[in-house]
Image (cartoon, rainbow, N blue to C red; front, side):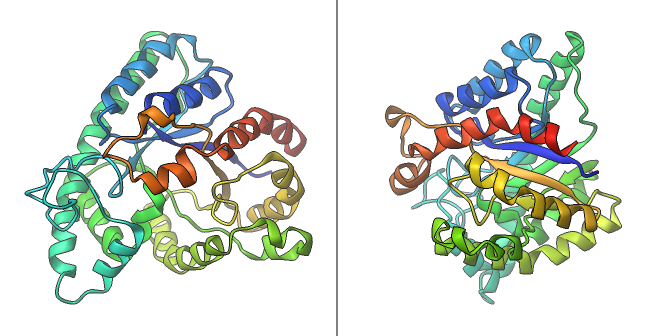
Length: 315
């Protein structure tokens, strides 16, 4: 028997994104969520969650969703100029930018030190806000299984070598008790085995899958060293369109692999949709149009609402 974790990314990206995710939480459909803490609306969205906690059947585990792409530099743009956009306090590094910094011999050291400042700032705020939620759950006798800090990152940026080094150094220096760091390790073979589905995948997602798979081995070693549960992720090849029908079709093969590897299986889904009027300078317009505003977010929300059926069959 394997452990399935239905996980929603991007809580606190916008108010409407958060409302969609909160609706899933109220129905008990999510095992865990990722919380963005560097958006202008983050505080309001956390307050919205805290207000809703008495209505929840349980409080899902909550991860700090490190973000170097959208939102603001919590360390301050002047402190992390390599991460900031055009000298402002806005973050502006794409995945490609971060990877380039990881490989740049002249900038890598400075980039790591600035990343440590920003990671430290985001973890500090995230820890405080998540603790507020857990205390509220305890106050109202709402179950919550979380014990320590949980960490992942927007666009899986924590897997990039220079970001990973910065993150693990901050964890050690601050002596954080961490129970989970996402390992974005997804098995490609199960997606390729069904030839009829090949045309339903975006080619760029295969590239993402392979790069993150290469980076995943250092995370495996870290998790083993720190007695964390090993995991597989499901949400890269199908990123942006995690629909229920293909999940059901592929699930037996993926579950078999997870069970054989003695790994937890995490469904990484994005059930929260942004509204057009919520697009601000904190969010790139192209990203909003391609992903956050897209109707596929509703498809993924529908999948979340139905995944309990799949869990019952599995268990």
